[in-house]
Amino acid sequence: VWRVPEAARHARRFTRRSLRGWGVADTAMDAALLVVSELVTNALVHTDGPVRLDFTLIDRRLRVAVTDASPRTPFQPTDPGWEATGGRGILLVEAVSDSWGTVPVSGGKQVWSELLLQR
Image (cartoon, rainbow, N blue to C red):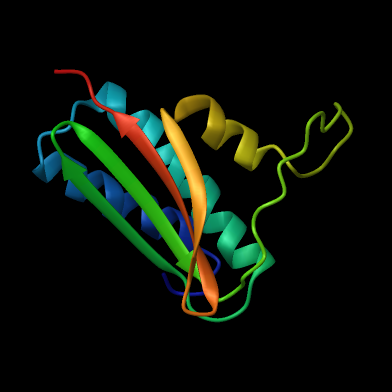
């Protein structure tokens, strides 16, 4: 993912093209695009260094993974409040994902989300 102002838009476009090529339905694509947008934006805003977007589709389970150079795991607020200007991204990822989490990778971390696609 390039560190440019349009990075999240480019990541969503890449995701949409790839998932359409795999035959993923538009209804499932909405959730995937939301996850990509939130995870890529978080990585670009809260870290320095390279950011990588990967996705894998195995047996109708889509895994979206964003890797960055920061070992700090995402903050998950319990109640961001209506006046909060941030902190809702991970809550959105959690809400639309079947599972999600973080794993340390070579000095940084990978934040991942899995979405179970309908047959």
